[in-house]
Image (cartoon, rainbow, N blue to C red; front, top):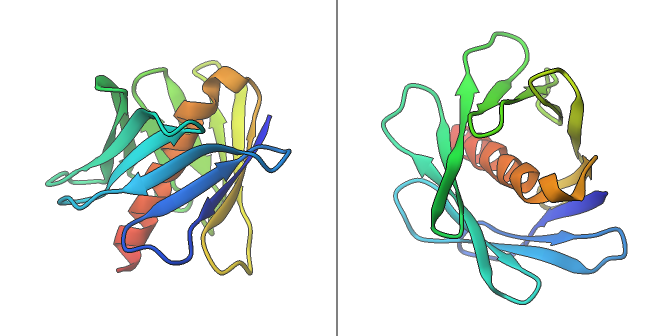
Length: 157
C-alpha cells in the first residue's frame, strides 16, 4: 500500500492531506494551537481518529500517539551520531533514517520490513511517499511521519 503525504501550502498551523494511489484523500491532518505540536488526524469522512502530541521538557524529542482518546504509545528520538533513530514503544518498531534525513525504514523487533518513507525533493511543501507493507499499519506509520516532520520543523526554527 502506498500513501502520498503532502503538506498544505497555505495554512496557519501544520496541515496535511494524505492520498492513496488512486488520488483519493484517505486522511486529513490539522494542527492545533498548543505548546509544542498537536496534530489531529481525521478519516475521509471527517471523523477524528487519532492525534500526535509533542511532549515538552524532554531531553530528546518525544511525541505521544493517541487512537481516538486512548493513549497508544510514544515515538522518541534516540541519541545517534550519523543516522537519526527513533523508537516506537507501543509495538517494538525501530526506525532508522539516512544521513540526510530524507528516507526512513521502519522495522519490527525481529528486523522485518514494516514500511519505507521517502521525502520527495524539489516540492513547495513537505511531501513524503509512504510504502506500507500491511494496510492495518497505515495509521501508526502516518503518526510516525507526522512526528518526524514536526521534530525537523522545530529543530529548523
